[in-house]
Image 1 (cartoon, one colour):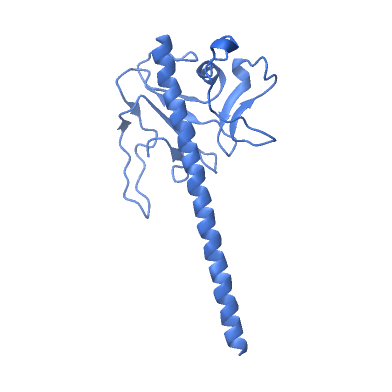
Image 2 (cartoon, rainbow, N blue to C red):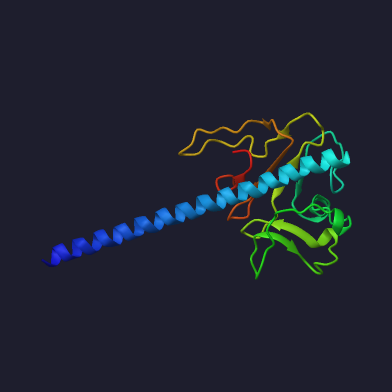
Length: 188
């Protein structure tokens, strides 16, 4: 009888652990989707800014190679159009980080008078997103994960270039942009 009770408890514990794992996986998938939505907003804002102004934002200039930058500083300041009067500024739907959260739009200093150095768009780990911008205007960007070897459970070999004008990625929970297993990317 004692063995049966132990077996029942073991089964209940196992089911509880499986349920917990499934819930964590669903939460992780939801966070990744949320990140991809933010990344696509950045890509769209870059295209809209260029179309509207005839140039790239935040000091990005035409160059021989693609430019890698972050979602902070002058680039984000100009994408949000914080340099124009309030009545012509488009309403952007990036979430403001609240109550110590690290995810969303963060203003350091005065919210009323932001400067290029005071604004950042952060992922849930408190890091600015990485952006690769097609500043040589060849219609593609260098793939930052090119040369990555397939993993144990994947045969994915990243292409050398991506046929898009910009690519955005989060360095993931380890905050290391070089470790691609946990990075969240706009292109995959």
